[in-house]
Structure formats: C-alpha cells, structure tokens
Image (cartoon, rainbow, N blue to C red; front, side):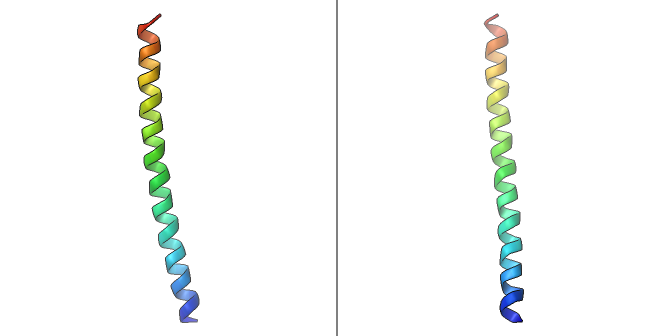
Length: 44
C-alpha cells in the first residue's frame, strides 16, 4: 500500500511539473508568434 501511495504522489508531482513546463513553452511560442506578427504588419 505504501508503494502505491508513493507512486501516486510521484505521478502527481510529475504531472504538475509537466503542465508547468508546457505552459511555459506555450507562452514562449505565443511571444514568438507575436514578434512574427509584428514584423509582418510592419512590412505591409
């Protein structure tokens, strides 16, 4: 039972860290897209 509890806690922690990583990557990609959009607008 302790092993299952430990594995669940580790899985939960891994999931949270993965979500934060993906959220950070999403923000970085969004910022890159905004820069590209701004460059495209200025070259019209």
